Length: 405
Image (cartoon, rainbow, N blue to C red; front, side):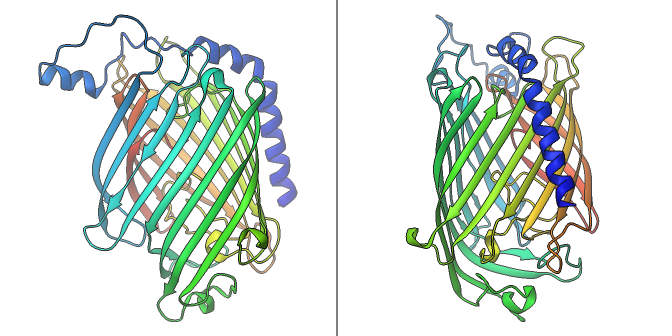
């Protein structure tokens, strides 16, 4: 099964590489988007409040496009919270030669003791010479766990802890669309607690599961990136491949020495019959695996815990956890209105996780769903995404800014 997964990933990577010339042409054609015939919620707010548009004196490549969405939603571990998602898209160079950068801040609070402060950034310097990626979080974050492997739907345990994450990486362009660089990664799980029978006994796993324990991992990453997209908020046709090899040695403060590998591949295929209309088939696959023993339990690969917490729509977060995890998803995206204000998506995904007894993949866990899209900011092409997904034993809504991938 593992050989099949690596073969699939290799074929996906090869296909993306062979499509470089076509993707390059698409990317060049779409670098400066014509939004004159598009409408978003900001346009209608200006009409409602009778705000006259300012007079344009010329293109400003450093203009910032803000999107803000205050909502109420579910949080891991059950219950609801006030969630405010703020996204800023901006250019740090000429729009014809520089991708749009993006910073997203999504704090949540349940008006009691549960809250989170996640800040993510994807920065493109002028002419795409460097890509700077950041992920900083402070979370008071109870969540359910089902143990290792596929688990059982009726056997879950609520785990409570505080969590600090600090990931930063810098990648230098080696050739067009191809980048390489290094990063620093820190994970700190504080005061990990669970109800009877306790996390260690429930999971049968001994690293990072002791009652009241702290789990600290500090390491460096080697990053490779191939990206022909020009907008990560709402990707246009193109290809994406990201490889992150992480090592956490004890001399940097890690409690155990461990390594992991994360490979993320995506492809966006235009099906357009009308200019400037969203009509796209999006494909996503990632493979995430630990490369040795001793990985803290909460650092093991798990569904919904990918870098942007976007995988597994229609599933409980962390429903599947193991030493290795393989994920695939496809989504069809289409505008409903000619002006791009409303659109829809349909999606399907599947997950397979290594079982603890054999460390092999035995079961496939699918989910399906659909969603509505409302254009919030046409300048950055940011949508309000409202999705509903269904899998065995779970169904639920999710709402946020931007696409899942």
